[in-house]
Length: 134
Image (tube, rainbow, N blue to C red; front, side):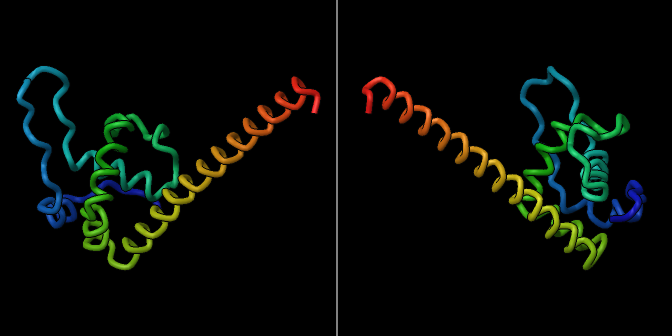
Protein backbone atom coordinates (compact mmCIF):
# COMPACT_ATOMS: atom_id res chain seq x y z
CA UNK A 1 0.00 0.00 0.00
CA UNK A 2 2.29 2.77 1.22
CA UNK A 3 5.35 2.96 3.43
CA UNK A 4 4.21 3.14 7.03
CA UNK A 5 5.12 6.03 9.28
CA UNK A 6 3.88 6.39 12.83
CA UNK A 7 1.34 9.13 13.41
CA UNK A 8 2.62 12.67 13.81
CA UNK A 9 1.50 14.67 16.84
CA UNK A 10 -0.93 16.63 14.65
CA UNK A 11 -2.45 13.42 13.22
CA UNK A 12 -2.78 11.87 16.66
CA UNK A 13 -4.40 15.01 18.06
CA UNK A 14 -6.97 14.93 15.26
CA UNK A 15 -8.18 11.41 16.12
CA UNK A 16 -7.37 11.01 19.80
CA UNK A 17 -10.89 11.97 20.91
CA UNK A 18 -12.38 9.10 18.90
CA UNK A 19 -10.66 6.48 21.02
CA UNK A 20 -12.16 5.81 24.39
CA UNK A 21 -9.48 4.87 26.86
CA UNK A 22 -9.68 1.51 28.55
CA UNK A 23 -11.54 1.46 31.81
CA UNK A 24 -9.31 1.69 34.84
CA UNK A 25 -8.74 -1.65 36.46
CA UNK A 26 -10.16 -2.26 39.89
CA UNK A 27 -7.17 -4.44 40.71
CA UNK A 28 -3.95 -2.43 40.22
CA UNK A 29 -1.83 -5.56 39.77
CA UNK A 30 -0.60 -6.69 36.40
CA UNK A 31 0.99 -4.93 33.47
CA UNK A 32 0.16 -1.31 32.79
CA UNK A 33 -2.02 -0.72 29.73
CA UNK A 34 -0.25 0.27 26.51
CA UNK A 35 -0.95 3.69 25.12
CA UNK A 36 -3.72 3.92 22.59
CA UNK A 37 -1.43 5.80 20.23
CA UNK A 38 1.19 3.02 20.16
CA UNK A 39 -1.50 0.38 19.55
CA UNK A 40 -3.03 2.48 16.76
CA UNK A 41 0.41 2.83 15.17
CA UNK A 42 0.75 -0.96 15.28
CA UNK A 43 -2.67 -1.40 13.64
CA UNK A 44 -1.69 1.06 10.93
CA UNK A 45 1.53 -0.90 10.38
CA UNK A 46 -0.50 -4.08 9.88
CA UNK A 47 -2.91 -2.35 7.51
CA UNK A 48 -0.13 -0.80 5.45
CA UNK A 49 2.04 -3.91 5.17
CA UNK A 50 -0.62 -6.63 5.03
CA UNK A 51 1.54 -8.69 7.38
CA UNK A 52 0.34 -11.16 9.98
CA UNK A 53 -0.24 -9.87 13.49
CA UNK A 54 2.56 -12.01 14.89
CA UNK A 55 5.02 -10.20 12.59
CA UNK A 56 4.63 -6.85 14.38
CA UNK A 57 8.03 -5.25 15.01
CA UNK A 58 9.24 -5.10 18.61
CA UNK A 59 8.74 -1.32 18.81
CA UNK A 60 4.99 -1.92 19.07
CA UNK A 61 3.04 -3.56 21.93
CA UNK A 62 2.38 -7.29 21.89
CA UNK A 63 0.46 -8.38 18.81
CA UNK A 64 -2.30 -9.97 20.92
CA UNK A 65 -2.99 -6.64 22.62
CA UNK A 66 -3.01 -4.84 19.29
CA UNK A 67 -5.26 -7.42 17.65
CA UNK A 68 -7.72 -7.39 20.56
CA UNK A 69 -8.02 -3.60 20.44
CA UNK A 70 -8.18 -3.64 16.63
CA UNK A 71 -11.19 -5.98 16.76
CA UNK A 72 -12.97 -3.81 19.35
CA UNK A 73 -12.27 -0.62 17.39
CA UNK A 74 -13.26 -2.19 14.07
CA UNK A 75 -16.52 -3.63 15.41
CA UNK A 76 -17.48 -0.31 17.03
CA UNK A 77 -16.66 1.69 13.89
CA UNK A 78 -14.06 3.83 15.64
CA UNK A 79 -11.24 2.61 13.44
CA UNK A 80 -13.15 3.37 10.25
CA UNK A 81 -13.90 6.93 11.42
CA UNK A 82 -10.28 7.47 12.42
CA UNK A 83 -8.93 6.17 9.11
CA UNK A 84 -11.35 8.33 7.17
CA UNK A 85 -10.37 11.36 9.22
CA UNK A 86 -6.67 10.67 8.78
CA UNK A 87 -6.52 9.52 5.16
CA UNK A 88 -9.88 10.31 3.49
CA UNK A 89 -10.73 7.96 0.61
CA UNK A 90 -7.52 6.04 1.11
CA UNK A 91 -8.63 5.30 4.68
CA UNK A 92 -11.99 4.09 3.38
CA UNK A 93 -10.20 1.79 0.92
CA UNK A 94 -8.04 0.44 3.76
CA UNK A 95 -11.20 -0.43 5.71
CA UNK A 96 -12.71 -2.18 2.70
CA UNK A 97 -9.52 -4.17 2.18
CA UNK A 98 -9.42 -5.14 5.86
CA UNK A 99 -13.07 -6.19 5.78
CA UNK A 100 -12.41 -8.36 2.74
CA UNK A 101 -9.33 -9.84 4.41
CA UNK A 102 -11.28 -10.62 7.58
CA UNK A 103 -14.21 -12.19 5.75
CA UNK A 104 -11.89 -14.01 3.36
CA UNK A 105 -10.15 -15.65 6.29
CA UNK A 106 -13.48 -16.58 7.84
CA UNK A 107 -14.69 -18.11 4.56
CA UNK A 108 -11.49 -20.10 4.18
CA UNK A 109 -11.82 -21.36 7.75
CA UNK A 110 -15.43 -22.41 7.11
CA UNK A 111 -14.37 -24.21 3.93
CA UNK A 112 -11.64 -26.06 5.85
CA UNK A 113 -14.16 -27.02 8.52
CA UNK A 114 -16.62 -28.22 5.91
CA UNK A 115 -13.94 -30.26 4.20
CA UNK A 116 -12.80 -31.84 7.46
CA UNK A 117 -16.41 -32.54 8.49
CA UNK A 118 -17.06 -34.19 5.12
CA UNK A 119 -13.90 -36.27 5.50
CA UNK A 120 -15.01 -37.38 8.97
CA UNK A 121 -18.41 -38.41 7.62
CA UNK A 122 -16.78 -40.40 4.80
CA UNK A 123 -14.49 -42.10 7.31
CA UNK A 124 -17.44 -43.08 9.51
CA UNK A 125 -19.44 -44.28 6.51
CA UNK A 126 -16.52 -46.35 5.19
CA UNK A 127 -15.84 -47.75 8.63
CA UNK A 128 -19.49 -48.70 9.01
CA UNK A 129 -19.55 -50.39 5.59
CA UNK A 130 -16.38 -52.33 6.43
CA UNK A 131 -17.83 -53.60 9.71
CA UNK A 132 -21.24 -54.51 8.30
CA UNK A 133 -19.90 -55.89 5.03
CA UNK A 134 -22.12 -53.67 2.89
